Length: 595
Image 1: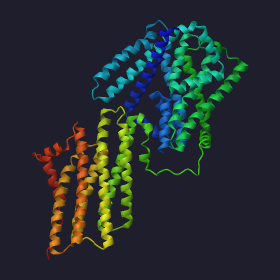
Image 2: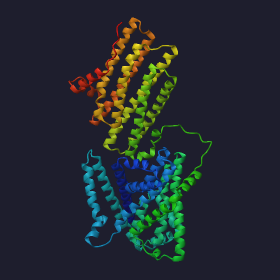
Image 3: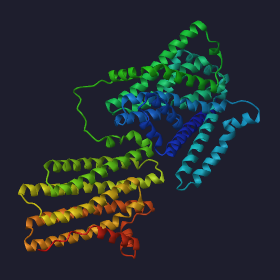
Image 4: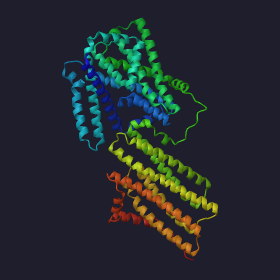
């Protein structure tokens, strides 16, 4: 084997890993975050969790990726440790799909059907279709992702063929044969498989390399079996690295993965080699092919799952013993689950990370709206407990703003789809507006607190005006948040006419209050507080308007709020004028009865 064969081997391995990565990324993007959502939801039943783990891993072609996601779920408390066991077992089964795909390279036969089944025959066609789909996709994400999957598969197979061709001369190499004979020692073979997989951090890739080497005809079952056993242990490295700096339960999840593979390997090795000692399996001296490796890989992982499934709780206990509780450890900052879910491990699956971000922003918006509605209520009927709750909520929403904003900035560096990029733009703009709504709620609550301390109260006429005004504010908050949650730009159009009505109400309320001041019905101090209350409420409607405009403009592929407002207000927009009039008729301030 000369230098050029080595270069071909390295190039083939590079193509193989690139193809696997491209195909996996395409599958994840095509799912739009649904696969991760399935993992999150279908785990209450352990058998269902096992099947789900196998299915998801089989689709994304990476048990490492699945276990890293599980570590992230456990770290963010989306998933309990007991739920993670089934998925981890299923992930080991799902990863065998790759070895069966790669076994297609070993198909032999001269018939037309057998020739068509060979990857070297259909991979060029898939590559051609893939590149056409990718180049003509433009904004069609599904088309582009499908093209990436086909291209990835074709590159994967080309890489496999290149590696097989590069190692072909090794068949007659005595030194290579001697090395393989050494690996037939169960311990050495297991260590070799573990080290190789740990280095490239993919059991599917290391099994593929072994399948390429078996094309030389120099690898027997006695060599392949211990190497495959070691590969299952080596794949745990990715999850262990991912758990560094994570919560205690996340580290335990990675330990469950490690224990499952180590215990399964030890049991298999002891039972298999003990039987071989007495029975002397004849096939051990035979040369193994790609399909044989796939069979060993599958039988081992399914067998481990069957044997260890009843002892899943013992694995959890073992993990708890390995990563024990420490009384002296300080309890970390308590955060809502939606914020804890924003784990950096999910940045590798952008579509799912976007879904998590959106649910966190939705919760933030609901908290802000609820807080402001409570602030309006506390102006009419003072409650010290409610005021304190509004203050705590404002501080919490500040945390939402900081954490979500930082997470979205990190996520912006990922390869996002067009829809996700637009959604991110909306969220980055909206979180600031939702945070400002909570600020205005706090301002209003503090005004109520000061008024209560000074013994100042609003007049009956002020409260009546404020009641009608509050209903308009409540409606604009409801429409804004619902249109944001539904990503409904049509519903968002109703915000601006209502905001225009609120502006008119605000001006009218201030004018009416000035008249009350002149007649002595309200005091000067009351007037100052009333002015602040109305101003805070009017600014909340402005922030609602901002959110609605973001939804409308970005949906239309533009972002020019001033242009949008000019078009609907300065031009003869009949729909806008009609809706504004409807809202003005709905929210007419009560007329004071003259004595």
